[in-house]
Image (tube, rainbow, N blue to C red; front, side):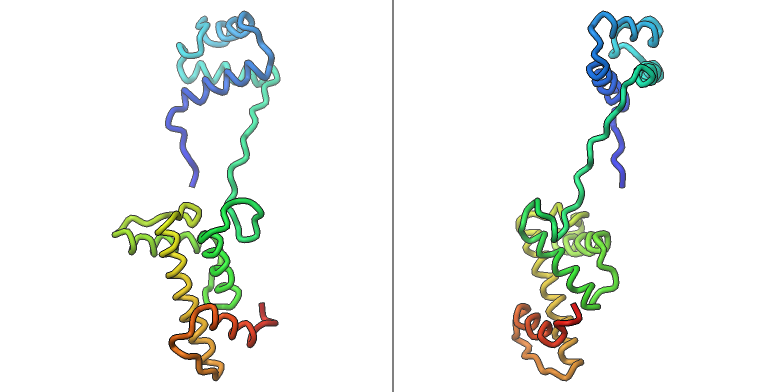
Length: 186
């Protein structure tokens, strides 16, 4: 999903002002360039979008180099930055379930789809699209749902292997028991 610019004119004006600063233009030369490339207009706010685009292209030819700010990447469980909260635990359990073979797709996209379905059920139809947007009660409920799912998967897997886990065994206990049996696998 890409964000669309709701006001391309404002964006062009901002870029022109950045170009002016980057090129070190004083007010007189800046306005002279605007007049030359902008059909005689000496203020960027008076220009149309095509005129602004022409001025911006001219500034690029004069040496302006637009710099894109790096976008914020998604946080992963191994990330050294960002919150160490329910969202990190959700990602860690999701990755574990994928590595253990309980789910087919361990990607962030698949996790986001699952989060959206779970939060839509909890919030009466309006789901949260990204795990990174989970906060407070939504994050806690989503984490608990994922733990219950993982617990069911662990319980069933242990039963298939001939072990008889107790129905009241916690997620943590089942996980430890499962890891003892499958430790080398992960």
